[in-house]
Length: 118
Image (cartoon, rainbow, N blue to C red; front, side):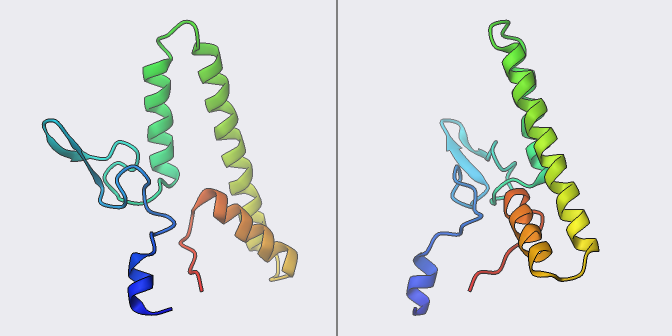
């Protein structure tokens, strides 16, 4: 693959809303992207928590879906915590194939550390 193909290939961890720029264009001009908080890449832990709180605040006022929103956010937080626990325990193990694979899978879901692709 030459350098032109590499430059044209989109970043896999870039924000899908702002295409990695960190800004979106509105009628009043450019503003920070609300999905990545202006970072330009896919959200990580703290940004995901900020977005969850925004969703909870905005949609928690609607009586028709408040229970569903709270359940969904609870489940997402619970699953992310379980993945962090799995990742942490795998780091304490030796570099066996299974622990390495589990660490890689958990990191892919959590995006704790950047992954270098070949």
